[in-house]
Image 1 (cartoon, one colour):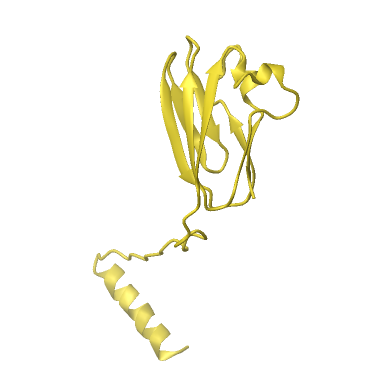
Image 2: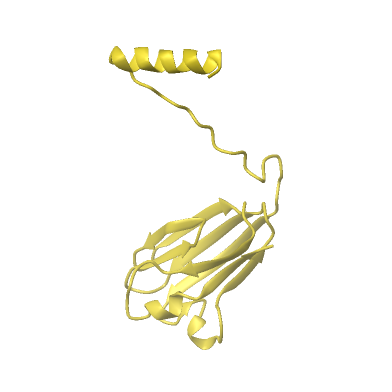
Length: 139
């Protein structure tokens, strides 16, 4: 065992033995987009009885949004229905937004990870199934 290891173990033992608190600090890894200014990409999502942006009338995933990694994404979400709806983006905002009938909110984030991420409603309702298949493509 090295001398520095012995000193660290001794300090921890003394600190804990004296009723002290052992704190270990970890810093998060740097963002892959540190120092990168991506484009600002704004999208409007309208939730109503036809799903998100009329997804009821689309085949396959809808809506589909494509951006670049490190872009700043802004979703302007408008709930034109009377009941509450949610809006979430897998990985970036799993908790998402909750919009009361007639409400509108913004969801903003930077796309730090490439891949496909689901756009979905977080509140079960009669048209919930129409709001579960949107995609955010980050290239």
